[in-house]
Length: 294
Image 1 (cartoon, rainbow, N blue to C red):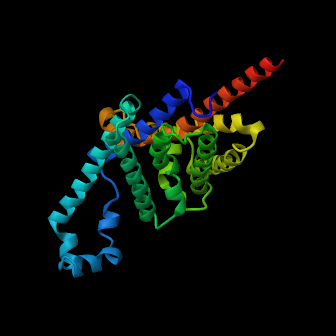
Image 2 (image 1 turned 90 degrees about the horizontal axis):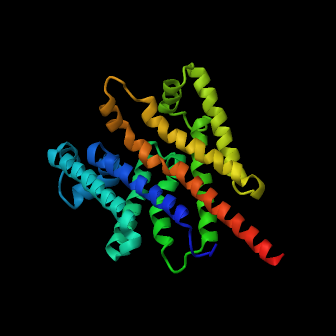
Image 3 (image 1 turned 45 degrees about the vertical axis):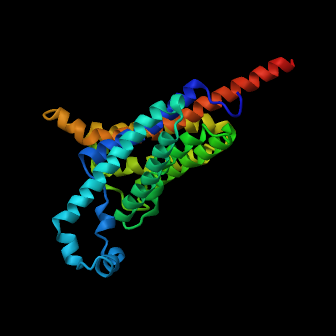
């Protein structure tokens, strides 16, 4: 395989991964909410700016209906940006316009900001930020694959690092290094008929396996099994969001409320599958070269 050309299947999976991140986040921002208030209502950070430059008291600023409306509009139009990013990803290869490129990149920068705000809400737990590394890196990776400096080996190494970081970050919560999120336990108990104690034990084992995967993904002999684990577990944890919270009495409401979390997390399973496909193509290429030599 040429070091500057991805196969159609690999390129398609990469495209779907970026598309799913943008679509899921667009769904969230257009119909639900995002943590921008943690920034715009940060008294320590913004009070000097609001009172000294805009000459408005902090209490008036945070209680004003216009402030909340402005934040809501900010969330909505960020959702529009993500939706345009999803559309741009679908058509970028055929049209390759600068406008589409900048929409994708600007969407990626907003995903970085979103990940920072999610971390801020969690009292600056660094794992919360890095758990989203795949999501906010994908737009930049996608654009990179169309650039003159694109090299598959560099991309593969970087993607391995991203997968490892995301699974280690997830594992830190699962094993209890950070407080185990209640929704983790609820998802396990909602899908499996188990006790809370068993759910926490199950999560600890899963976290330990996440650490092993992050190590074995860099060892050639164990690469495939590590990637298969990452693909299966990444896909299952994405699906768990909608499955565990599905209400048979309110099917469409349940899907509308939870599906966006599943959609933007599909990339956590798709990117390991992307690496598996590239690895298989490299193996086939090496085999063909050996046969030519013989």
